[in-house]
Length: 279
Image (cartoon, rainbow, N blue to C red; front, side):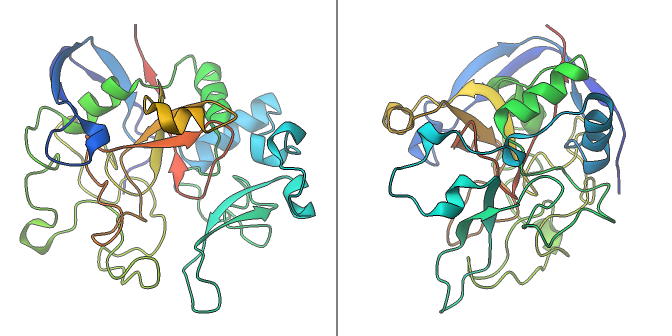
């Protein structure tokens, strides 16, 4: 397990960004030059985010009352309470796997009865875009662009995954994803049902951990699919890397080229971030 490893400086160079063989939003594949930068070896952890909050008194978006402008007039009263989105395994009685849970925030990722006690080395989640940016600024760093993030994740590889073309080479899991029928049965063949501590799987060729799976990660790049952007009241940013909820039968976004839109003001219990430094 790896944690608090500090940033790793990556050389500048050409990078193949995007993909022409997967989801349409990843196209077109193109070659771009990326300048040198440093990037956190792991996702920001609960311990690291705790130090930021202790030093600044920062209050996250999920801990604040919602903006009334974002709440429909006919919305149920609980939507007026601070909280965030939480995944729960689907059941016949509760077939919807996402719900807004009052009291869910980075200290209580699955709701008010949950805790991060004993999870210091887990990635901090329930973090909105503004929260991630505030931490990065406090640390004297910033969020990566989508191009910088993908360059770091691929680490020079031209294969489907940073480690090769097989998702589970020789039966060895290389990332924390969902095994089994999503969203009802995570068989945890990789050793984890839900989030894992950072650094439990082998790093990529740049020495970076968990660039694929575990938690999605915020980037500073607005999501460019105009139909999704125009349907949202607030800005939508690109998240990268997939999470422990990515499964063969549902979300095959456990690849560096994969991208997903996320409303800036809404975190969840499978979205975290890491920071970069440089130009």
